[in-house]
Each structure stands twice: as C-alpha cells, then as structure tokens.
Length: 206
Ligand SMILES: Cc1cc2nc3c(=O)[nH]c(=O)nc-3n(C[C@H](O)[C@H](O)[C@H](O)COP(=O)(O)O)c2cc1C
Image (cartoon, rainbow, N blue to C red):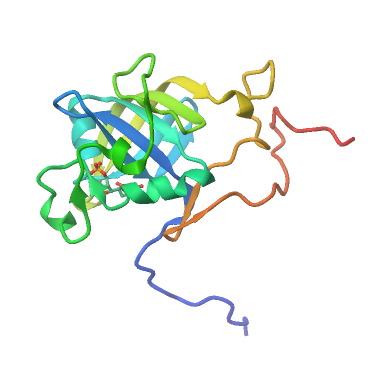
C-alpha cells in the first residue's frame, strides 16, 4: 500500500508565492491609481496580469491602456500592505465594501513617491528598483466574470543601477530580489540553490 503523504484539502486561497507588483494606471480625471497585484508573470517582452474584474485598475485599463508595472522588493512590504485595504473605485463596489475603502491618493496613503515615466502617462514608483512601462494589448474576461486577464506589452524597462551587471543589459540576480506573496504572508527570496543552463549572469567559482 502507498504510504499516505498528502491530505486532500480545500484552501480558501491558492496564493502559492508569486512576486508583488504595484500597477499604476490613469484615472478618468488624469490622476493616477496604484494597486498591488501578485498574479503576474512574464512571457518574452509581455507580462500577463490576473485582475479582479471589479478592480478600478481594470476599469482604467479598459479606457486608458497605459500602465507601469512596478516590481516591489522585500523592504517595501509595509508600504504594499498599507495599500491592501484600498481601492481607487468610488463608490466601492458592493462586494468589496466589507473589507475595502476608497482612497484617491494611494501614493500618499502608501508613503511612496511618483516619478514621471518616459513613454506612458501613469507614473513609476520611485522606490521600486524595477519599473516596466507597458501598454495593455488585450483584456480577456474569465472565471465566470470574476477576473480579467490583461496581456501587457513592455515598452521600456527602468532598473536601479545597483541591480544591473555593470556594462551589460542584465539584471544581477544576486543583487535583485522580488517581494513574494505567499498565502497572504510576505517573503523575501531564500539564498540561491542553482542557476538555469541559459543564465547570462552565472558567476564562475573562484
Ligand atoms: C499583496 C497583494 C496581492 C494582490 N494580488 C492581487 C491580484 O493578483 N489580482 C487582483 O485583482 N487583486 C490583487 N490584490 C487585491 C487588490 O490590490 C485590491 O483588489 C485592490 O482594491 C485593487 O485596487 P483598485 O481597485 O484600485 O484597482 C492583491 C492585494 C495585495 C495586498
């Protein structure tokens, strides 16, 4: 008989540890919205985002597709958490009312600093070491209307000098670390265990 090693469970959430990004989008009145999201992954020069269909971010992207995807690092977790109960939507959608409140100036609420982007109207988050200017190319509804998948083309990458391998176009994985959302807890990366065969930044042993 196979020994029992796993339990069959029904967890209320499936956030198994993905990076936190802060999305800036433009509101109808020209001000900006700022929202934390952890459903984000890269495919070539595109990023795919999973967004709740009632988020103000989706509404903004449907009308004004420019955005900046600001990748947070571990030291920013408290700033991210200050944004957690906020929405740019006014009025707050019925389903979000028990937990969320409207906030117009999320940069101030989070204690973060806007910095002008080069190619898009929403600002970058100055404190984020990696900032991706982008344009949403497709918004696809899913999950029986509960979420929207946004495919975004990255137009320009801004990387803090300290995380770039000098004289190259490469991010140094030893200098960069994303903030990870792990079943509603915030984590930093643990030490490296190895590298992929296509790594362009592997260090040779000394
Ligand atoms: C760490 C973290 C990760 C989150 N991940 C997502 C996500 O992947 N997708 C999403 O739609 N909402 C996510 N949320 C919730 C949104 O931030 C929340 O719905 C917020 O109200 C959206 O802001 P908006 O309505 O102004 O766009 C996350 C929140 C936190 C704090």
